[in-house]
Length: 346
Ligand SMILES: Cc1cc2nc3c(=O)[nH]c(=O)nc-3n(C[C@H](O)[C@H](O)[C@H](O)COP(=O)(O)O)c2cc1C
Image (cartoon, rainbow, N blue to C red; front, side, top):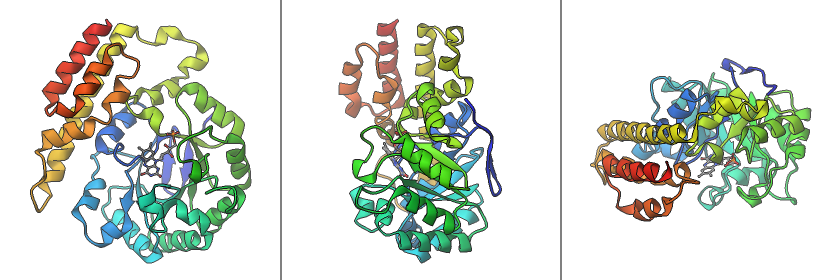
């Protein structure tokens, strides 16, 4: 695929196929696996600027990173330019992040009802104030993750592109769907392409990429400088490698491991993912002032339950495992169930 290294300010993404921010999924465990499998960069989960301001332990825990996670964006949301600027400063001062990303596209009620996320698409002057305040507060590059619009009645995609660029953002990632459509429906790569044509800053496209062919199509239709993958990477960190190697494009089926070893690889990936989640929870709990609700391993298993349906997609007999999910409290229990599933699929 025709993608060049992408540079904005001090950040260079050698292979600009990146992991999207996804609350509840893209913690350090998933991010490090995706980086190792070829993701060009990663974003943290959604982090509240007000939470950082209030000195909230839970908010700081969302920002926990592994030691070798680069390039990585600290992804923050909020409505108040001052709070966003302070949060960005905090993120910069941790020394763990390569750039700051501002959420201007999240459509969930909890965020929009506070006038943040996608609500800013209905209020571009406020979005501009946030970008300007953050730019003035930090020396790290600043990007914006947004959408092609809120709905058909509010600001259009070219107006959004203009405000983001004029306010000083160094890069923009655009989810090619309207906020009113959440994550459903076909992404609109033509509209994304019109934004790309107008903008001078680099543009990463997002929405609906589940395979190398989808990535290829997004780049061919819109001309974006990079591709961002969300749901396509859950339970499938191999997607980055596949796109990098252009496996489907080349029709090089020899390069794809046989189904039986793919199953074993999947089981090993799940074990590693779970192991990293346990370590992450141990680290997070060490920094807590009050005791956590569950011990680290149980917390990890609860978090991992949301990944399991994606890992076992397409496997025969997965229903039995999925029905037991809520009762699996140790890594050994989860992996024993997975071994049974691997055996049933040989
Ligand atoms: C479970 C989930 C959580 C998400 N959390 C965030 C988030 O915290 N911040 C954000 O900007 N987008 C978030 N998104 C949106 C994704 O980053 C991405 O824009 C969207 O899923 C479309 O990409 P995809 O079709 O490749 O999944 C989330 C999406 C999902 C499915």
